[in-house]
Structure formats: structure tokens, C-alpha cells
Amino acid sequence: MLSELLQGIESGGFLIIRDSCRYSGRDLLKSFITAALNREEVIHILCFDVSEEELKDGLKPSDTQRLHIHNAYSDPLGWTGHPNFTVQQFSLEDLTNLVKQTSQPKPAVLVIDSLSWILRHKTPPAVCQTLQQLRKGGAVRAVIGLLHTDMHQRGTVGSVCHLATSLISVAPGVKGKEAVARVTKRTKSGKVMQDEGIFCIAEDFTVTILSKPSHAEHKTNSTEEEQTDPTANLTFNLRLSDSELEAKQKLTLPFVFSKEKKTALLHPGPGSGRILYEPDAYDDYDQEDPDDDLDV
Amino acid sequence: MFTELNSILNTSPDSFTRGEFILVSDRQSDASFLIHHFLSFYLRARCKVCFLGLAQSFCHYSAVSQRLGVSLTQAKEKGQLVFFEGLKECLSVLTPKENNVESEAMNFLRDPPVGLRSLYEFVRSSVIGSGSMEEGAEQWGPSVLLVDDLSVLLSLGVDVGAVLDFSHYCRALVCSQVQGNMVMLVRCNGEEDDDDDDDDDDDGDVGSDVLLKGLTHQCNLNLHVQGLPTGYCKDIHGQMEVCWKRRQSDAPHMQKNLFQYKVYDKGASFFARGTSSAVL
Image (cartoon, rainbow over all chains, first blue to last red; front, side):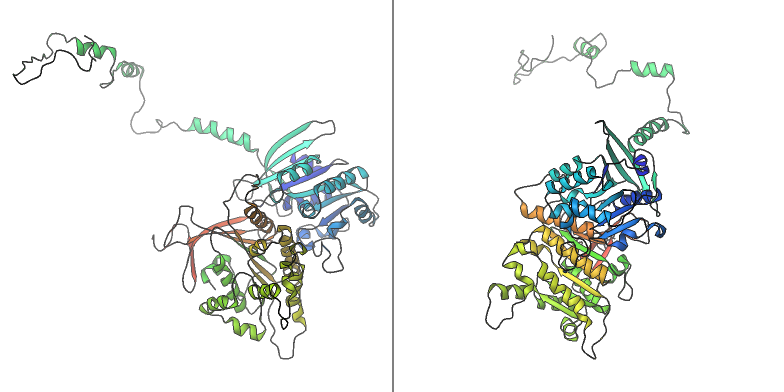
């Protein structure tokens, strides 16, 4: 499902990439940007978290006419007096004006890096309202946002993700370059589809989907069971023939107290040893059995 | 300056990557020895250093740097080092006298919701203000900002969001605009918890954890110092995790390495796990 999302987001869609400290989702975000640029779409990026140079690093320079980066990194709070874009400008009117300034024929895709920055300075209800208005408004065709889940409370993350039509949660994979993506997609009819896959991102930000993790685990388990047969390939014989197997099952172990052993001990047959006991004058010979454990 | 750490990080005073944000963090341990390393490293590299010493006095840093072979007093006189002594400045805010010229940088002590904008203005003036130099002044290398440490600001009543904004603005100024480097120390007290539950009782610990996570997202290199998971050891003082992020030259993935260290009188030695000289 990750590859379907990379091929295009439907109109009015809202995609959130959720990441954490352990694995940054920015590379996947850049993959989405690259894929959209390759589809000849117009993209507006609100850049809060990283500088413009760092965001453009790796993207092909020929596509920059359709790529508009709004620098909210150098002065998002207006401390220097002449800010380019502040976090307070994250509202429907300001964003619509910003997108319309470039006067492109097609409605654009809005990319927000990152939503966490905005959520730290505006209340979650205001942010959710603006995002919902943007989706329905028509100024932008679709919205893609990056969210750092470990920087907010669970309720905040849950509220914002509830608005999304698609969610991708990324986590580090087992091997170095791989990462695990859990995709949740909500269709307009209300159906929810979930998928999980391992992917890796190349230097030109193309995504390669590798095998799925849950299926891969099952496969390795079954092959392992077939492969490990310790009695094979030895210089001596460890296997049992049928007659040997029968004899083994018939064998009684010496210290197991089975019924046959008990009767043999209690009722000794002829030829087994007998104990003759003649008590001395000083012996206290008690006929009674103090332990009462002989079944006589 | 610790030579073993330089080889681990693949840097030297003659050649180091510019525009980097190095985050030094610790959990129930003390990573301030790394701040002394970076201070002497950048002074030896002939960089212009702005040092916000909020945790200790100037004499303390001066004494330790003396042992590492660098004189802070000389650097201050030559204009290479701008030292902000947090302990002295906050006294001037809390007990104002007539002769004292009150520095605006610590005005958040009087009014914490104001945030750290004035402190940022101080950093900005010392990093950029060096443009107008007197005649005959020496030319220094790229500007470097060192902060020891950010968690002190949390305990002084500043909001976590304000500290994250401050570090964001410092990064935009020092790393992106001036192409210098930035080193910040953050300390956490609580245990590392893997679940997302917020603990309402321990607001202080949650604050420093959120600060650490926010700064980890922003940084290029994270040096995380912790005690040994097996307990106290006389010969090994702890473990340090080196976590590289966002290296443009390599493939875009994170790289983590774990080392153990021992701090000496005049330095520290770093070695791979299990290869301490006491063991081998």
C-alpha cells in the first residue's frame, strides 16, 4: 500500500507520516515530494524544522519551478522583526493567499514539515480546524504532514491523526538501511485498510519496498525446522530401527517405582534374599510399623 | 581535548564539519567532561567561541581547561572567547545594586513566561556582533556556541517549549546562517520509559525527557552518556552512545556506536565494549 500512496494521493486527501527519535521520517517525506514532482504536480512546502538548503538537498534541481519552499525556519516567531513566514500565519486565509500567490493553474499539494512545530505553538483544536478547512477548501489539492509522535501527548497525536485519510508510521528496521512502515488507509466509504512493509530509500529518494516482515518471519521458521535434523550427516549412526525402538519403549528404568517393582519388593520370590532379625536384649523391637507405609 | 574522541568522531582542530549541531546528553550520569573537551577543541581550532556557562562558575571551567592545556583567561582577553557566566548574571537580576549594569539576558528569571528571547539576542550579538572589530584584532575561525547546560533553564522555571524555541533559533543562526557549530548539554534524571504514558507526578522528569526528544530531532550528532547497565565499576565510568544523523555524504540512515569511557585527571579514554585496560 505504500507504493500506491507514493503514486498519488486522492483529492482532498491528508497524509501524515509519523516518526520518532529512533528513525526520522523526513527521507520518506522527500520521497513523496520527489514522486509528486515527477508527476508534474505543484508543491508548496512550509519549512519549519530544517533549513531550505537541507530540505532541497537531494531533490533534482530541474523541478524547482514547480516547487515552492516557504521558509519558516529562520524566524517562525517573529523575533528578528522581518519574518518570512511565522507560525501564527498558519490559518486558512493566510495559507490560501500564500498558495494563490504563485498563480498556477492546478491546485497544489501542501507539504508541512513539521506539524509538531505548529502543534507546539497553536492549540490542537485550532490546528485541526485549519487542516480540515484546507482539505475541504479547494485551495490545495492534498496535504502531507510530518509529525514527531514522541514530542506530544498521545491525545494530541490521536486527534490530529484522526483527521488523516492515510497514516504511515515509520520505525527503524532490523538491518541498517531498512525501515518498517505501518500504513493505515481510510477510504471515503469508511473502510479502513492496514498494511505493514519493509522499505529502504535510495539516495535519489526512490523507495524500494522489500518483503513484508510478518510473512518473512513465518517463512524462516518453517525452513529452519526442515533444515535442522541433527541425526543427518554424521560419521556414526544415531537413528533407531523399528525393533530397537520397540525394545527402548519396553525398557523400564531402574529408579522408577512402577507397580511391578513394588510387588517384586513386597513379595519376594524364592531365591531372593531374606532378612532374619533376632533382637538383642537392649533393642527396642517394635512390631508396629511407625511409618505405616508397607502395604502388607 | 581528548584525542581518542577526535578519532571516534573523525574530526580534528584542523578539519571539522561546519554547520553541525552536536547534542551531548546524559541520563543519571555526568557528561560535562564532554563540554570541557569541546571547549578546548574549538579554542585550539581558533574558532570564535560563545560559551553560555549556566551550571558552573568561570573559575571552574578555567581550572579544568588549564589541565587540558588551554587558558580561558587568555582567550577572553584576546577576544576569542565570549563567556556568559550565568551564576553571576542571575545574581545581578535578583539583587540589583545601583552600580550594576543589569544584563537583559537573564530577564526570564523575573518573568519566566517571557521566554528566552533576550538570551537569544545576547547570543546573536556575540556571534554576529564580531563583524565590527577593532584594528589589529585577530581573525578567528567560524563561530561556535557552547551551552552548559539547558536543563538548568528548565529548573529555573522556563517552559520546555521556550527552551526548544531558543535552541531552534540558535541553530538557525549559528549552524545555518553563520555556518558555525553548536554544542549543547542536556541532562535527564528519570528512567528511560518506552511507553507513551505521561507521568503526572514527575513533571520535572517528563519535561527534560520531552526536551531531550525535541533536541534529538534537531541535532546532527548525539553523544548520549549513561552509567553501565550492570552497575558501578571502578575502571569504567560509563558508556557513551554516538549517534550520527543526517550525514549528507553517506546514505540517509542513522548510525549508532557504543563506547565505554574512563575519565582521568587530564583527559578521558574511550574504548569498545569489553576492551577496557582493566579487563584485557
